[in-house]
Length: 364
Ligand code: F6R
Image 1 (cartoon, helix red, strand yellow):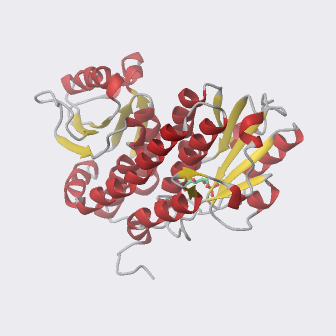
Image 2: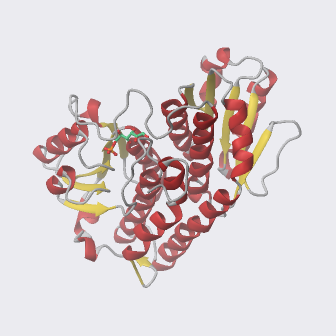
């Protein structure tokens, strides 16, 4: 069942290129996103004046990436909401809001309650769901199915990956419908999205160095993930993955926030995983890394291939092959997943079934 892999998680990490392919290609017609087979009319994308993304956990972190991608692209407000908070707040959703609900299982109770509240308020609900015919899929106005196949490991990997690709496709179609993308621009965007598949494969070919880095993490009590913008959105998921399967306390911070308190926690050899793939803020992130470095942090740095790396800035460096910064998340996610995976395995923990957690959360 595990196809020769020691754990479902590792098997599922390796299934990501196929999962991406299966989710993206059925939605392409003449190289452009087209959701007619999904029954999602363009009207849904034209009619709204804001987007509210609602989800829990990893799915919510996929939403954070979605926001960082969509807001500058569409020039409308995009909010990301924790379902268990949203449902008890008084969310500002109305008929002009497109609510995007994200859920692998389609059964998460808080997410379902948030969906029902959104519909009561008159919003249209588009859900991004992996499990066919699940409750969230049945109750949504429109469903965009991710095709990850069954995910067995409690820690979500391939589902996150395809949630991201779905949000990229939705963002692209929406930009076309709303006149923010010409057909050429949309086609170029889709090309970049497709090139994330070989980028993910490339990381999978070089796992051994990631295992070496995990050797350091496995001895740590705390770890920090830092990045800005999209890099911060990826870091949140990296930190959750490490916490949930390795039981190491981990936090993700927007790199510029460190000096407002958190830097007090950095000691000699505290691991800091710094994600710096975004050109326009690269220099700023690097200066934040210098600050933790000066306090003795053990720095694992992730940049784009070819980035200029200042002398002595890090202990371990990983590069991701991307040309358009917006697509860095795909290979970066694989590095962060493998870091968590190997750390848990090196600690001899139950990778696929971490303590206290369930795959589908149907309690409030
Ligand atoms: C973490 C993880 C959880 C889920 C969350 C939502 O690895 O898997 O954080 O992402 O419980 O679950 P779904 O997507 O089924 O609604």
